[in-house]
Image (cartoon, rainbow, N blue to C red; front, side):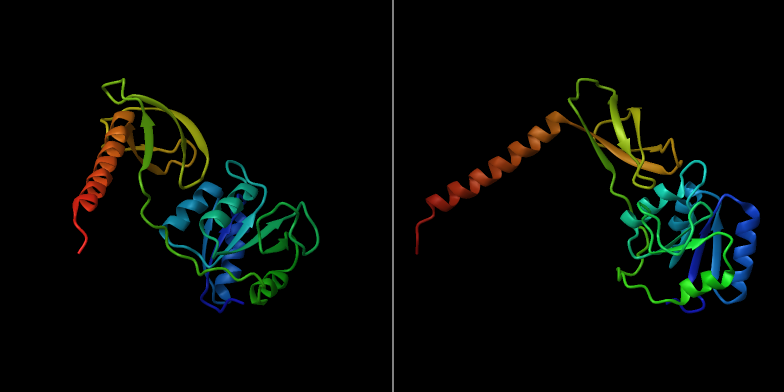
Length: 218
């Protein structure tokens, strides 16, 4: 159950529906924002995490099916209500990562009832996105300019894409996701650097063992 004042994010590609639902839910006391597709919804989450996401399933770009999978993985504390006119009833359609389902065309009272109903699945409270650790791209270091072909997984939308990366070794560089446009930081790490690190760690362990062996017992 969500008290009045809870934050709701409406995600739907139909502008008039977003406007109508935003108005109705705001009138009863909810704090409402809206997004036109999955990528826009992720940007909204980056600004402020909602308590509830009300998401259409059929949208261009990133569909609701995909968005809800990303939300469930990245922000498991958010309550998700899927909505669609392609399914009937009140049960969550198979394969949809949602806690509840609202059939488009039903009364707004049915939606308010869902928001007022306690949900069995208890998850941690939504946490704000933390600073993303730069991706580490491993290469053999044969290219002095730091050029490396890599498959990147965007931490924001979790889609992958191939990219030729350029940049100095061992420095944080940045590119934009080709799908959602969010910035991605990365570091090109050479095999030589990894070998040197392992060798240093091995030497350190050897020195400790040698010291312990030569130290007389008291």
